[in-house]
Length: 445
Ligand SMILES: Cc1cc2nc3c(=O)[nH]c(=O)nc-3n(C[C@H](O)[C@H](O)[C@H](O)COP(=O)(O)OP(=O)(O)OC[C@H]3O[C@@H](n4cnc5c(N)ncnc54)[C@H](O)[C@@H]3O)c2cc1C
View (cartoon, rainbow, N blue to C red):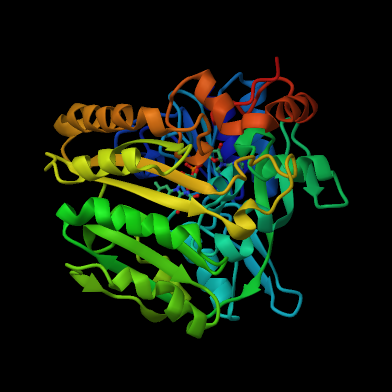
């Protein structure tokens, strides 16, 4: 194996990092510090050819493959013990066609890379809300973000891709070339290959009306009802997230918003957020889109994290009472929970139109606890599980695959919902041996 790894290393344009190398501990690290795995090797790929070599190598030596973009998988799916990590993070080229409003971005770009390059042209497309997240995992799972009400999810703006398949071919997909594969990349996760280039549709976005209103936590029930009222009639331009928010400045209770349309109607739509008594802080104002994208940035230090999430069947008074009761209880670890509403273009895809299948207007609920000291991991997980159990009567069966942990086959099926059967057929066509299985896995049986 040592000789084979040495040969692989010499064939790569990027670098192969092995146990014992000085950079090994850095290279094997992922965002969630609770995940501590020791791959046999990490191929830091410089482009599609490196990925082809890495896939061939892992297959011929019977090594499991983990594929990494930005390393932000909650479940730690982008690393493994004893296998080969195909690390796409060095693949960062970005080309913006400002006239055609298209961007081609390497599979290792973070949101910060992508937003920075597209904003230089006054353009953007929906991405997530935390700049270090990878565009790859985010887009392949769906991609919820501040622009989704007006422009759809990240995956809805994916118009093409270059993919290294399980049999080591480099293929293109677009609405006219292998459209079945493009359908699967729009929400089917990393099941069908390693995406080395993503091509997106872009939209003119420069300044948005954005920020947060925060309230004392003992106003939680009133504030969550306000969130419900405002989102119930929200125009497509408004996206709101309510709860104990992971603000870049630290957790705070409130409602964060982004209005990405004309400011006049935006000010009118947002006015009710300020009318509730007890307002602590109101940062909503016209801001550059890049500032909006940093509002919910997680702390830069290494934190362990445990999360649960589900779509709600309805944001009822009962659900609000449970969240409000939880909000006031001090917790021994940092904990946040939030609701994010999907409406407008995020729901405008016809049934079966993409592998992401949660298209009903409604709210996604997520609860997460984080720790710096690994000794707090169990307390944090128990806290999340208890909160989630309290919410059980109000939860729908569907769950967003990108917020899923290791929660068993039934939850994976719930994440893919009605798209499951078609995903299985696609898996048989593109990856019949399930080479790409370290993900929210579509099994081909
Ligand atoms: C702090 C934080 C904030 C987040 N905020 C949001 C948010 O606002 N909106 C949202 O929708 N989600 C959000 N998420 C969830 C996020 O979308 C997922 O965790 C996503 O998987 C991260 O993508 P990544 O490339 O960084 O992850 P990785 O851990 O690198 O990859 C996750 C999985 O994606 C697949 N994958 C990665 N790269 C490739 C590739 N090049 N080709 C094929 N498959 C690949 C693999 O299956 C891999 O297991 C957030 C997560 C975190 C930790």
